[in-house]
Image (cartoon, rainbow, N blue to C red; front, side, top):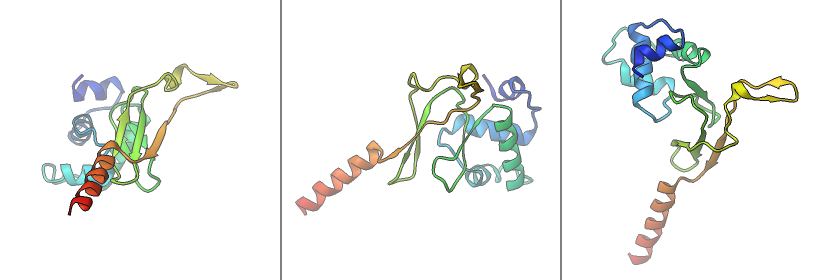
Length: 146
C-alpha cells in the first residue's frame, strides 16, 4: 500500500506534510521520535515545524495509521507497523526492535476481558540486544589478547 492510500484508508486527508511524515515512518523502521522525524524532513520541507510533526503524528495515531510507543519512559516513538507485535528496547544502545508476534499479541479489536473492550495492547521487552551482547563479547576477547 502506498502512502496516500494508507492515509485515505485511515480517513486522514493527505497533505504534503502528512504524506512526508507517513512516508518516512513507512520507510524507516527505526521507531523515530518527533525530533528525529523533524530533523530528517525539515531540509526538504522548509515550512515544516516540530509542532506540525507532533500534531500530524497525534492525528495518525488517533486514526490508527501508526502506533505510539512509550517504551523507554523518556521519549515517545512512532511505528508505522500497526499489526500486532511486540517491541524490545536495548538498555545498552537504546535501539528499539520489532519482535515477531506471538499468540498473546492478539488483535485488540477482537478482545474482551472481564466485560471491557480492549482497544490497545502494548508488549514491551527490555534487555540487551544481540548486537550489544556480541560487541561486549568481542571487547572482552580483545582486552584479553592485548
